[in-house]
Length: 293
Image 1 (spheres, one colour):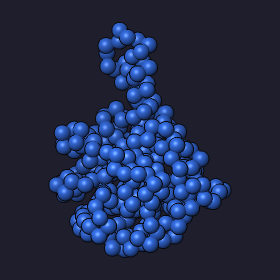
Image 2 (tube, rainbow, N blue to C red):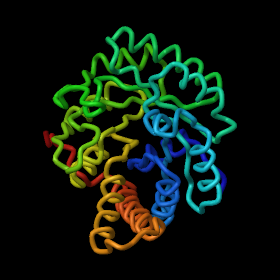
Image 3 (tube, rainbow, N blue to C red):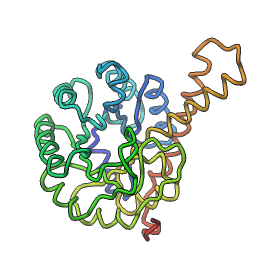
Image 4 (cartoon, rainbow, N blue to C red):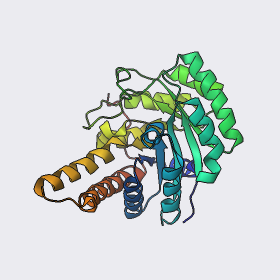
């Protein structure tokens, strides 16, 4: 199946009253595992490469994104490519300019660490450029914790500011701070589902939940019911991968062939992806939307 667009996947999720998962890929093994997991779930998904992942690859975005495009294009599942948490102005410009040639259909402009007015100005400028290249654009308001210890996860996105921000930036989706935090290794975040519902009513674009690895299955379903349409997952994949490698190496201290233990890690990611895709793909009309904060 040819690559699809992030816009199309999100619009489908809106129609179904469900959400689409967006998985962070760091290595080739991540890409292979994510795509296989999505296929096994019988769903679609977004493959995303973050600015941090590009930094890991010495700021060269092309090899990993070309691998994403190649593997996703040969998959039976509908998959799009997305640039995640782009802050560096040079990388933003490069990512937008090269998006079409790399199969990328969307980008997240992350200026949430800036003061509110600067966030609007920087995001609006980048969104205008991205839209001129046909990209779907995500922005963030109410900086989500966990990125290099940014700040307390108690920070919340204000619905009034969210409305003003969306109108002022012309973004296509809004990442909101509602209690989740990046890099959580346990599902212990306290999600403010009531706030999600208020935000959903305040803005004209779909909502995105970052830091979803730290959210319980029950709260993920409730968040989708309240209006979340894109769910970002990264840390849960890395936890699964690393634990599988660790178990294999502890049990087999004489193993030296990396294909043996990397395969275990890849399979662990696949299982995690399949579970999450199945969890959030079902319509949520029957889920209690009451506050769970």
